[in-house]
Length: 269
Length: 242
Image 1 (tube, each protein chain N blue to C red):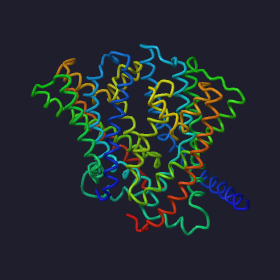
Image 2: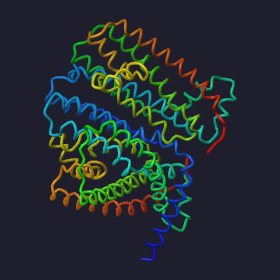
Image 3: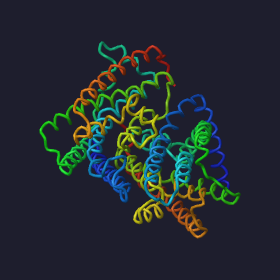
Image 4: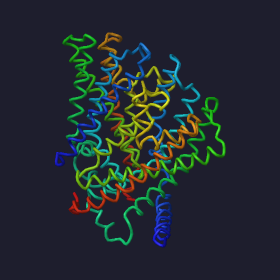
């Protein structure tokens, strides 16, 4: 218990430090916001065109709301720990984390949280503007219970993405590089998280894949909750599967980290 | 190529991206004869063009632009500015990534396949492909370089080097699917619509071959604008790092 409290204090300390450091450069968030909005806006345009010409299981309001939420949810749950860890291993600077009296995860998590909170504040006016422009097409009716479940799903989604991203970053111990793994992660993420094709519009095989891979919890699951597109049974099932993935990823992180350290040459390039 | 596993994984992922792109259009067109007048078979041709331009963007440009943004952030740009050569050229040609090879193979295959299913066999089509690729590369280079050049004002823009490769996705879709204003932008200010769909229109006989010359002229103008923009931006470069 003492260790957990100490770690939480460290996370808080580093998060606030990162917040202060990065708040000097708030304009840096612009490209982060645009990057995250490109695919959802593009997909929204495409599905609206398709929806105008054939009957889909989502109407145009649901499509617009879905992709606006995609921009928000993907930014909340996103994590760049793959880059962070991959970069440290590649350059040999990972050695610095090994001599510190706390886990490297605390540093990575704090950096992610500090920068993310700052960026989310920058994202807020953009979302408000988009919501105002698209207000006639938006449908969102979130009750208190749904709101709480949504918040829980977002925290779960972030942690799944964080540990998944960490795990992929740790592969740099073996591969020496991380760009290809990042590319693979983007590919799977876009396809299986519901960013390209919402679960409701996906063909059966893709629906099955989206439903049972960890990527669903990064985008699709929270939006399904927000849009009320799911049943109580599916919500319970979703939280159970998500929790299982989270435990599994946490365990795998520990195993792969130990194995990776044995492989680590610390020479950098 | 120093990391063979990474290269092999990159190749596999690149192939998977292509398959996903094609499958995505297949899903979109499951119950529709066409999307904005483009059938599934016809869409393979612009996809081939965009893939080849993407190979240039990722293989030739990406590492250079990433390094440029980093140099601006660290204040290391001065070294290149003091050399007796064109700084824009130097900064654009420092690295060449062999990760582009799988994309070139896949893009070429898509073009070949698109040609064969659309019965395009005239010898002049090869010339059209060549001019279209040169023009597409010119436009992609200029837009990408100008987007990263903005970091000279802001000093530190998070992942600015990822912005253009992401927006290149717009080139995969016919501009007719977008609202009028967006369509206008993609045909003029950010001419993504020209990269894949204009040459495909010409090859399929939907547009006059003369438009290819305007495409080439547009590319030249954009390269020149990127040069002017670079020189203008340099006046705002402070050499300060962060």
